[in-house]
Length: 440
Image 1 (cartoon, rainbow, N blue to C red):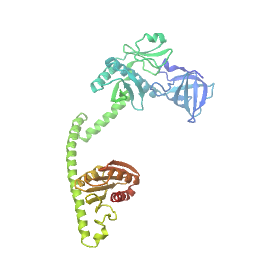
Image 2: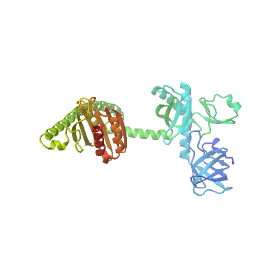
Image 3: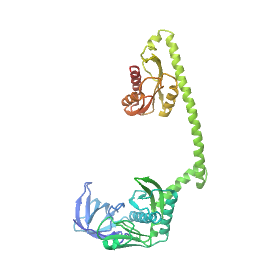
Image 4: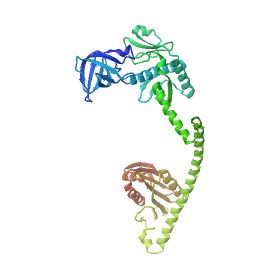
């Protein structure tokens, strides 16, 4: 296996070099990977993504650590073994990684210095970075203190040096974390602040990092996960945040710094309006429920007036042929031989909460069952409910109905809800639920 001399170990700012191709191999992707006798390309590792760039003008899309070699995955024609190639590392990407990785060392050291909170892992993501810190009680004050210390170290423009030490020498040093490998170590030293074994690319002085900003934090797997940005990412993040703040302020026809107070006031006003709307919705639901019962009584009177009563099936133990928005009353065999009211209806463009409110208003009446559905362009929604003295298992009826509309749902014997994507089967699903209720 070929060995590659890693030029970035001694100079993270070296981006042009010459090397000899010593091996070639085909990748599963169909691209070719070449191994060089020396390289300035950093391979993925330690939470830091790999460099990209060119070899003799052909794109290097990824570098992979194949210890003791480095694989350069190439897009296009790969140079032959034995040839001398000119490599060039993409500097904007390298500078970004230098700033993020060095920024991480500084921020992690700040948490150790202030709170004895070591970092357990580090990741450079597409737009930000993450560290997982052993911090049990994160809050704004703690985070801001660490960020303030880290930025002070950056703005003091402290010198950063690279040291190669033996295991014996490393054992005598106050390293911030234990080395992850045996043998000779590469140690990154930030003057009078941090000393850490690391194989990544780093700045020459802390001022090169620019600044650090924390975007967010949360508890994760027993640690505190902190999302941060440094250098050019911090500037890009500020621009996005500033643009958002100015856009929000414009909605209030106010200055950027006044937007927060106005937004808070609007949120409080909306809470009050929301409570009023909910109260009105409850009133509307009760009115709509009463209208459905009035419709039912009108149908019963009509059926008693003539032969239509026999045709309708009212009080015969069988429901009428089902159609959207109908109400039925029929006898179900109970110990008292009680007459049960079943209200079955399909609404247009009602959400589940709206259906539930009307159903709850209905089942305040004794011996009542509500079988409700609603459709929009693609989806079907269902709510089944019964009063405490009415028969039937709404959860079981709902599961069967949801199978028919190709969805999921369930609930308790007295209340259930669900839905599915096959809205064309909604009418049939409710009809089957009603038939199962009658035949229980």
